[in-house]
Length: 413
Image (cartoon, rainbow, N blue to C red; front, side, top):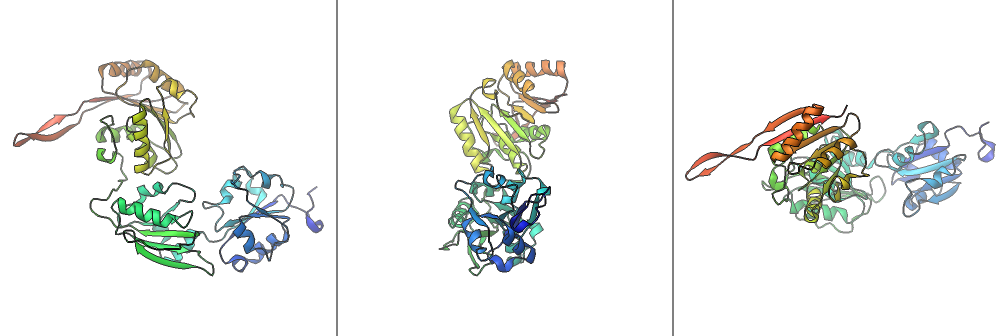
């Protein structure tokens, strides 16, 4: 028998209602959304959300706890009751609906979305949303915007507070994008809506509403720090002490690692962190763990990750194979070229799941011999990478070869 709600009404399996709401409050809601809010026994939301529907809600108001409970225990405890959750805009676009969907099956939810902040911002600016880069910086590092900074790109960034637009303008100016046009769209859809613009280099807007979206039209100087979309970033984009997989070898290595969305990479003996960083730059869903024994290099990896816009790169300080014990199972593993410890290679081979990829580079004879033996025993592909660069010899130019690299790539059966 279905449970009964207030006034004896029979409950269906859809006990949870998630309703998107804008700054216009009740005025922007449809009849169904208004009815469901009024019928709810419990209404969850932020203080601002609950204030917007105070004239409509009859059930008990529940403010989200601080810190926010991603496990949604208070909501789940009421699964036999009529529960309404209020969200900003579209609940499933960087919203609380995503969190709830991890705990509640779709057949148990009704969802009534409102336009997202990105949709509202694009409509105010007459920007084609499909051609715009969108990113949520709400509660996240502002450095995530770095990979998006390409000349002539349009970006919509959802921020956390009133300070973020100024901080982003300062960062962009430092990176050579001071000529970019920034528009702050505040309290979209409500009575306090306001749009103001300034260049990044002269940004002086004050008293910015904490509820804001930052629109960016990227313009740059020739010296701007642009992170290209291709694998094999220029070596000068990384801080390093010479311990770095060089640009051409890095491009071939990333091709062999074959990144796929949502995968985790172990970069063992990470050096400057360049392989893990470029793995993560392939797509926002990518993750990587850099394993590095040298504390100074580990600190350098963290700085490089921030400078390249992937601050989520995890760094484990320690020597393999001990340092990789207990780490989350990877989809792919990279081992750099200097080592020859058989225990590291064997530990990596054991850690890979079926279908996992391993790429190992050798520059020493000892490491090359180890890879040759593993290739003989297990198969895979061996590749010899030789790169020469032109450099001055007196008044003329000549080729200077870099150390050749032997690369073994293998997929675990």
